[in-house]
Image (tube, rainbow, N blue to C red; front, side, top):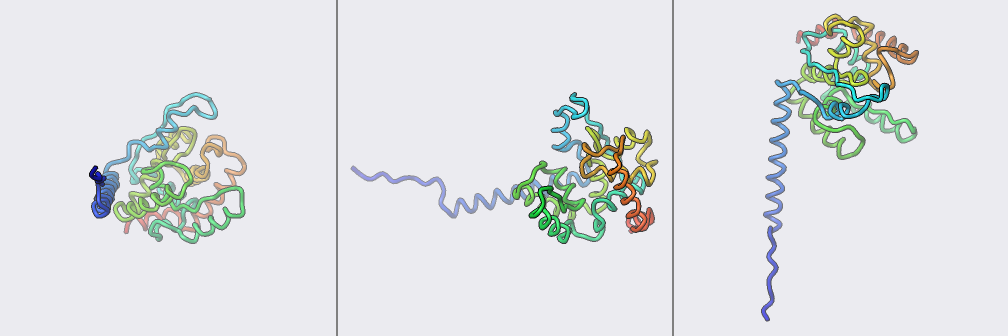
Amino acid sequence: MANKQIQVPFTWAEARWLFLKLCLVLFLVTVLWVLTYRWIDPPVTLHMMLKRSEPSPKTEKVDVIQHQFVELEDMSLHLPLAVIAAEDQLFLTHNGFDFKAIKQAFQRNLSSKKTIGGSTISQQVAKNVFLWHGRSYLRKGVEMYFTFMIELLWGKERIMEVYLNIAEMGDHVFGVHAASKVYFKCSPKEVGRQQAALLAAVLPNPIRYSAAKPSGYTLRRRRNIARAMSRLGGSTYIKTWLAQ
């Protein structure tokens, strides 16, 4: 009886070529995705969708997500200044990553039960717009890729504009438009220095820290952020950046 030969569907060379084509397709898809959001506002993020299906921890009811996109030119200059002062003071000068902050966060997390992050504003935008929340090396690696892409294809103004529109600023409250209306009864253009500092103060944990009923800790953070805003140069710092 003749030995039957087993047919191998792909040779190693064919498998490698198929893998390379798949990588090329994924690369082109992500480039198109990033470029699309360069000009078209992200309608929703995965985090918003998950929040939309979750009951509010305060009311235990499924609340409507409050969110409306607004252009950077229609915001108070205090808003980008406040988040830079609070979250990423090297935002205008780094290329998406603050390696010193990442190293410090890594070293601190090795010896502390409380985990802290060293993410820049650019990294937070990459995570919130294109990815999911969670801690894993896989997600962090993909986050770095998207961070590089938005720095390259968007630029700082667009990154800041998207960040201020998708950042979670309260229970089911996303972006400065909704936050301004809910907490201050005004438009984003009318937000003052202390109000902007307060919104930035709750960013690390907008469910635990409230802009509506700020705790003593939140108010101390607001004062520190307001001082940092002054040290950066106040609204002139933002005007100079936007004029470049």
